[in-house]
Image (tube, rainbow, N blue to C red):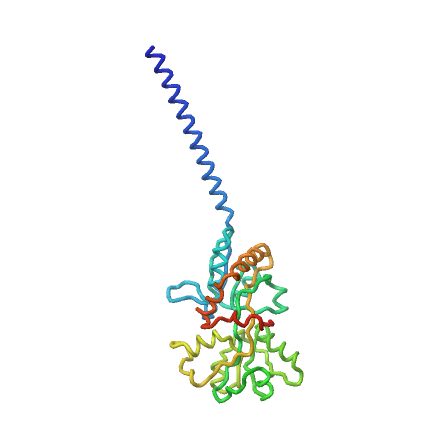
Amino acid sequence: MKFNKFVKLAAIGFASISILAACGNDTDKSAASASEEGAKVTKVKVAYDQASKPMTYIDENGNATGYDVEVMKLVDEALEDYEFEYVGTTSDDLLIGVEQGKYNVGVKNAFWTEERTEKYIFPQEFLGLSSAGLVLKKENANIKNLSDFASAGYTLAPIAANNAQYTVIAEYNEANPGNEVKLQAGEDFIVDVVQWVNEGRVDGGVIIEGSFTGQVLTEGGPYYNLKDEVVYNEFAVIKTWPLFNKKEQQFADAYDKAIAEIKETDALSKLSLEFYGKDLFEVLESVNR
């Protein structure tokens, strides 16, 4: 009897071990499945101009930040299937790198131009807004817009033909025959317009307000000593965009869905206030570019 009882207990024990082993196998399969799901996350490289404060730059702790970067971080949080890696670089390398596929997307306070649509995917949804204006000597502060500048016959700092700022001025000239701004194509993508104006080499130059604030109005900026010598007069608020590699349509579509949802909140207005000192979205209805 004792022997039979022992055999029964042994059989029950063996069955229990088998069941536990089977459960363990299911757990392993679930873990493997979860691991496989994790492997589906697409890693993408987001290039940013590391010297374009406050739009895109590296902070004192070595981290990527700025309005454009922080918006992309919100997009990253919203896209579970993507993992963003931020790569700091120069403006020129960003443009070339995105075009060639070195980077999946790039942010640099970029304006839309017809020429750029041939090289990059522009998504349906814009990233932010940027104030563009003229840097002038203080005595010329009465020049409020491009029309005033052209009428005065003033000279403009050269702008590289592949810089979207060149396109903005060219569009104004086309729309205002007889009162065109003297537009000269420069060899360098970016000219140090503050220095050129201060030295009297030109009467004015096109600059982004964020750049002017960082260079001139911020203590410690390279031209803080000129804060009482030069002024910034806004002539337009312009939409800015991320530039996607031509093969990244699926990624661009995912971005569109995420940013559209983000725009339903006040997150972008808060970032505009944080990095630009004002909510540019308040004038969105009047923005035509």
